[in-house]
Image (cartoon, rainbow, N blue to C red; front, top):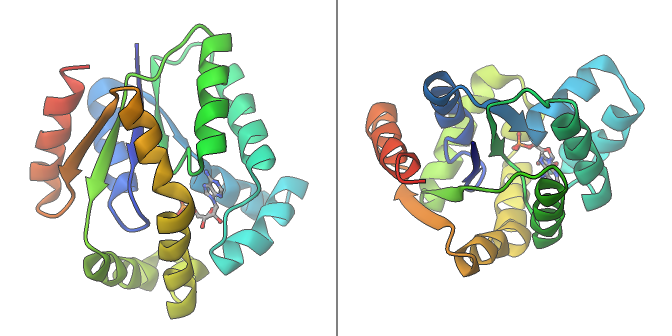
Length: 190
Ligand code: AMP
């Protein structure tokens, strides 16, 4: 069973590459950003709680995110494996995920990190903002905050997986197909 953490800053291409990974390896997509947007759209309490953080480009509190992921994993018993996209975003989330995996007799196969320089990230996010309808993609200060939050709070998660010998970084700049080709090579070794 494959359980992959797809990692990288906002705009690195995690969503795009997740779709390709799912199509080939038939994994279940667990994108915490998508789940929050779904809750927001449905007007649930969780959506209302998450909104104020998302609007500012800040992280939703760990316990809220972890509870939502736990629900999703325990309700997807038939899954072939998971692709975690945009999660874990803090070391506390990574520790909680390990615990959750152990409790469900599962294991993280590895983390694949998409490496993209900041200037290109900002260009991609602005471009996505023209069609995504995401307010957090359309405001320079929100884009800036999300990248800062990534560097301060999320980057240590890479070291967490590196210590477990589960970290691979790949170049996230190039054609979608070439990047996916590099991802396939990594996954086929898991
Ligand atoms: P994303 O679609 O992954 O860029 O996420 C959009 C927003 O949802 C983020 O800026 C956060 O406010 C929130 N969010 C998504 N995933 C997480 C997470 N794992 N931890 C905390 N906040 C998250």
